[in-house]
Length: 101
Picture 1: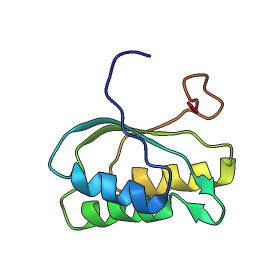
Picture 2: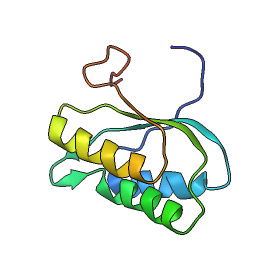
Picture 3: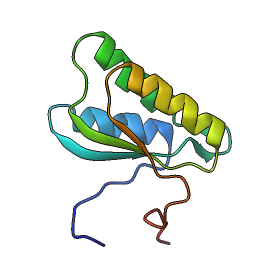
Picture 4: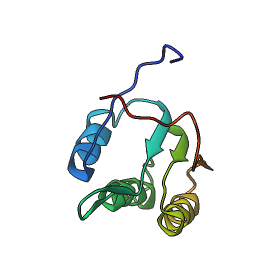
């Protein structure tokens, strides 16, 4: 733990709500995982980010870190987000990623 504040959204709906709550704030790091459980994926969150950039009001994100065990999904996310000017870094297999029960 590095002492920074973090918020976790475990579903795409919760992720969209979290983004909207922080719409006016700078987000230093936004960590995204492709597969969220069941049929849920991160794509609704990616679409919110894309739409904001398309409308000329991208979210103020320092870096989007993609951590996913799904290489194809991660690559597609990175491509889409980079297209809209977001800075993206992949962290697949990173020891920095973990879950607390």
